[in-house]
Image (cartoon, helix red, strand yellow):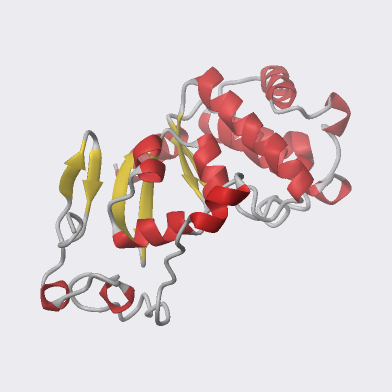
Amino acid sequence: SDKKALKAVRQNMQIVFQDPLASLDPRMTVGDIIAEPVRNFHPQFTRREIKGRVKNMMNQVGLLPSMFNRYPHEVSGGQCQRVGIARAMILGPKLVVCDEPVSALDVSIRAQIINLLMGLQRQLNISMLFISHDLSVVRHISHRVAVLYLGRVMEAAPKKSVYAEPKHPYTQALMSAVPIPDPDKERAKSRIILQGDLPSPLDPPSGCVFRTRCPKATDICAQKVPQMELAGPEHIVACHHWRI
């Protein structure tokens, strides 16, 4: 049945939310929050087995055993996000969607959480879809990058290609905003400033959704939706004029 199929999908796909505190039930303890997916998907496990799994998972994400009986409001934002990560990872999913998982956290905590996610991804051999506006974080964590505009993929390629040789005008504008540590190179680089406002996602422009702000736009961009083209090894781009 559809319900059974959906349950199987849910077991293999989990999510880490943007706001750690808002995504946790305030009436449940840390131990119960992390245990909930195991109870839902493995009712055959005893309470002792579940507790053992939870404590092991807490250790993997850097949570002290003393936090087991605490409530979300009694721990910090960074620790709450570790609880959210433990809850997502405890079933051993194939894919974890991380929706801006560090944007609500203190700058001092962000690197710790990013490094934790990278370590777990390698250790547990899972795929991770990491959604972020922070290009330096994306550069640090990703193997492959997809650039979206109004919900459409503009370009996708291995990380190195996207940062070194962006093909789409939108990606080029984004990359021109990334600071370069070398002051001389930073001064010498040209910044691409996009004109106009972001259109409404409910009423996107015809043809290419980026055309109203694109410096390369011509008539064909309004008439025809650009299809994905191969622009290099494993590098795809949706633009009529990417060769220019």
